[in-house]
Length: 221
Image 1 (cartoon, one colour):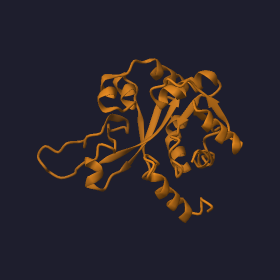
Image 2 (cartoon, one colour):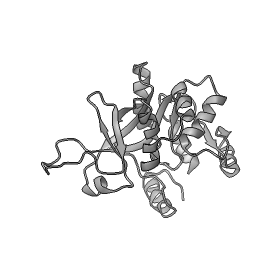
Image 3 (tube, one colour):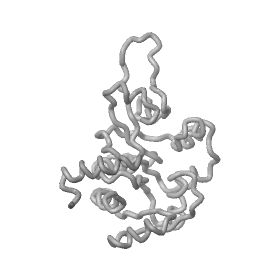
């Protein structure tokens, strides 16, 4: 799975380097087996943001850093580029992420799917596991419901700053690490992109993903 994620990330047109950050020797050996690049990190990181910050400290030459989850073997390289673009075009943007338009009521009500609401300039106002916005008068959906895709892009100093901040109360309540940035005043640009491909969240998801990949010709049996 790591190899598939790695090679799809390499297809990004804007990313110049792909590195696997891990504290597990088994993952490191797997990356070595396909001649990939990896960096060993501490094992006590609470979030992916914190692990990424350790990498940023060790590689000061890298200015823009993308956090791609290792459980997304079907990640779309075009979505990676879409997330990077705001930082390339606007020096004032310090952090960005992705969202997609939700169309099913069950998505809107599921706590497993994170929702996001935006301001008029496309920056996140809030992320929640609850259905937001709440329509008090049942007037129907007048606002596009957006689901959040957990891919983040940071300027190096922004990432280091977030890692130095204590866990925020909102972050702790919702178990959403991006709320640490919001609660501390860091604006997050949200790019509307295609719906993310399914990820491997549970062991039972492996067969489902392998079936999709086989149909796409990405897995040899």
